[in-house]
Image (cartoon, rainbow, N blue to C red; front, side, top):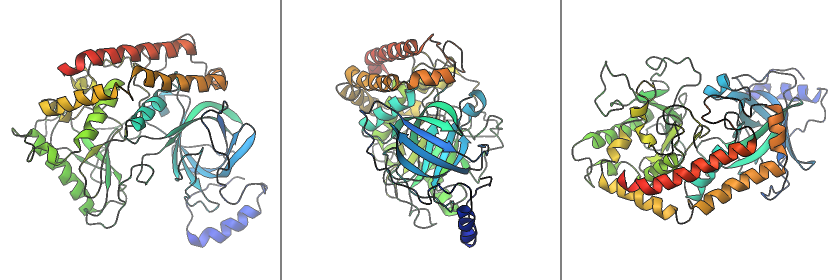
Length: 465
């Protein structure tokens, strides 16, 4: 089967359907099959995701047709069509093991909501393959902690992937960040006026490494903060511009009124934060943000010492009548001591001060966080929340029970050995590793020791923020 599969309009449906029935592969299911087996976490084996792209190369874009078969202990639990493409920014250039963006499709190439691996039905998915993160679990760990704190982050399932007969190793099935009752539960677009919808914006790179930060961001896909990373008014000589990318509604769908609406909200917040009376409980920044979400976002990023924190892969959302909320968190593969630059491996530094450590980096932390921490009330909320969480969700016992459970699952299934037979990178430097273990156990020992030291340091220093 050698076709280039794209989204198809209605007038081509009949042609495609007739063509598919004439294909050699008569066994391909003509409808998406629902999962019939409950995926329990205590099952020792990992799911296997087998993908057939009919000898077509998977590109950065567009998505191409594939058939996906999910099996568990020799039982087929799902079979259906997908559209698949490579994804990621730095990972596409630095890592041999690729990441994939996937849509579940019907036989006509139309998106269809499907439950994959027992996760809630949706159509957009991420097949994430840890490579530079040799623990294989950093993202899964922080997403689970966030959910346990009551802050939605992508649900995840470990799996192994085979593409066209080639074993690709251990992956995680992640939910793509999007508006959905099971994901970012805000209102979908109702009108183009601006007020009748929810929004997701993000602070991030554009896909790809060769980005001109001054020219490649444009009005169609993003808008600029009126302040630089120091909190000074933006001018032609500013070299630390903060860009906000439209995520929902999508850049190709967002109206001019919607753009104006969300820009105005951000600017009102930033203006209030920059004034002398920014701490005023009624006229200051509190009018515009959900403080508890900012506190939890801070804690998760500082707990993990995420070198990308606040400045990359940073999502902000707003419901119709709600305030700005931070999150969901995203992309922590360089966290937990896994980066050898800008104090990324330190246990005794605050990452909200990144601009002080890496003054030449193009992507800076917005002035928000240093300014917020000038407010004693905000600092007090962080301290109180931290020590409350340390009694349960973020206690040593809770965190390490979760961490050790992930490791045990991967090791008992045999997937760790298979992954590192396929990718022989243990004891080798992969950008930007701060540590290189000779084996998997050493990688986990490093992560565990680093995390324990980090927790102890925060306990001793958070009251003096």
